Image (cartoon, rainbow, N blue to C red; front, side, top):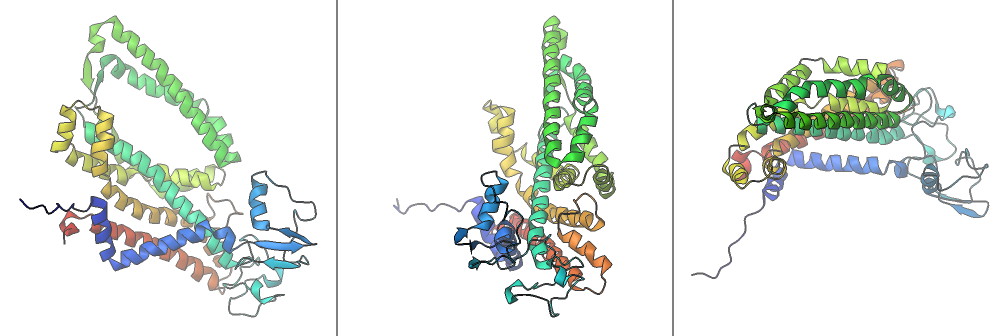
Length: 431
């Protein structure tokens, strides 16, 4: 017998990564997205209206870092510097960011949409607006850099919400079907009342509170939404106690009957699919106070359908495989089989869909910003930069540069999605 050790085959994701790298366009697109993420994370260190380090009246300051500390309540600026324009201070020494402007800063000397190719009225060359200004004198390049934060945040958070909802509903529908999940008859009879009272006390009674919270801030709305979830949990706990009481009264109430979970979730998917999502989002954003948080939540709550369908289809395929049946025969709990056995082998197509959905969420946010809906007027996004171009048709740079940023980002996410789809294709995996 040979003593030669048996070589281990590469893991699934190692093989996927190798296949992904073979698609050069997708591979380069991934690095474009990595660069965009780095720019978004370091936006304050690339474009800011205060220097990294400054020496003023014999004292050294680190204004950018002190601003972070001030926002956290750990530092307080002196009355002389709290609203000071650091560009006009007689600094003894200063180390500035590459673009010394924030998106909302107005340079009145270079207002009325100054071209990046035109002569600009500047005190120093390093203060130049490299991509020009808008009609208010705001720096376009700074807006693009800080706008990347908004676009990526909306894309990632919204898709994260939709993935959570879609994976949960899709896995439940695909795994349990219409006949597998059985619950006691008492619980089945009380379930409609439980749902009604959870809605009534969790949302209907608190609808005015939720509306007022949404009109004040996104974080306050999230807090009250969590309170509503807690109220729903309390109501559900009360009805669970009634369920146990009824089950003890008579054996008939303890008999288990099947629940058509797949049918219920499939009808939910059909209802959401038949709803004009863009009109729904525009309506909700028009009713609620403009907030990036609200926009992310609304996009996430209305874009889970495709992920739920994919997850359901994958679970229908894997639940009858041998390793799932072996886990069931060993007496594992259902949640463990779903989380640790079925889901890891069904989530791959969902990742492909998520890459495409991030691109769609970025386009949706840009469209809403362009229309002036959902996003506060003082927040600079790629869509709001495009909207400014409407009032200045001759200012080509106001349309070209934000449009290119949206185009490149969306194309990059789509290329990464295509690369993942090809890398996960079993027909191409061994080539």
